[in-house]
Amino acid sequence: MGEFLLFIVMLVAVVGIMMSVLLLLKNKPIFHGKQISIRNFLILLLVYITVAVGFGSIYISLQLLGLTVLTEGNYQVGGSFLHLIEDAMYFSVVTILSVGYGDITPLGIGRWIAMLEAFFGYLLPTAFVVSTFVYLKEREKAN
Image: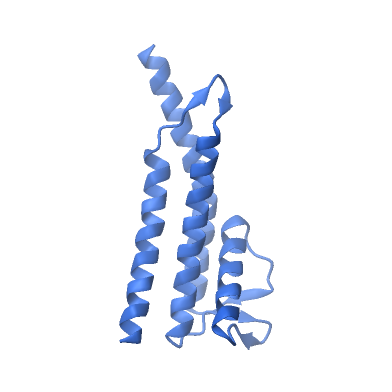
């Protein structure tokens, strides 16, 4: 039963990540002159938070399933459940916003997940800029 719940958590995390990216791509930016609106910034921030929490949930679920996906130094990440959450979320945020600091490292399937997360970290601002550029071009054609 516990493994089924962890599978559901991982499935919800993946769906949340995909829905956040789709939200970013489908959002039509609102501009006031040449300045970007607070609404656009908040949407981008919300997408980053959702994706980071989604990937963090995947790391936590895999650790709880018994797979060692994150290590801190020579030790498996974990200890108490709260420490596992702290380490997994920290690693997730650091991975999506940069390429990591090296204090917590992924192992096995965790490496592939971290590579995918780092890719999303670079893709999100690009998608935001491209969607804004496309929207401005469409707006120019309409006028």
